[in-house]
Amino acid sequence: MKQFSSADDILEFAIKNEQDAVDFYSKYAELVRKEMKDIFLEFAQEEIKHKARLMKIKEEKIFTFSSEKINSLNLSDYTTSGNFTLDLSYQDALILAMLKEKAAFKLYINLSQKTDVPFLKELFLSLAQEESKHKLRFELEYDEYILKEN
Image (spheres, helix red, strand yellow):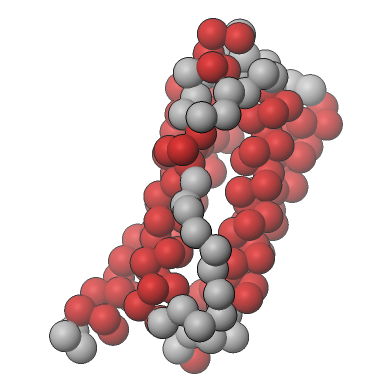
């Protein structure tokens, strides 16, 4: 498992995850039900904003951890595995979206617990809440259009 060696490493990881989410939502917006297309595009825009917030923190160098805290971050808890292709079913796309949002939520909760800077704690909790709302939206869609069909 990858160990982070600095706060910049952690922020780079979070920034990359946000960009991956932007790419995912942008790509799959064209493949989902018409009613969900706007949701996917809206979430892509929200992930762009998350990325910008994280990049600002990184540029301003206001996020620091001790080495001990950095090494306790479990990278595998915040990623989804696999290569994603355009031939995912709608069900699989929703499942993948839920997994991505859950991973992002867990990352931001963990980061909020590892900083003593009130502004950063509030920011990470806010990002976690937004990711949680995204996951809930996909869960509702899954329940409404996948589970009801079965």
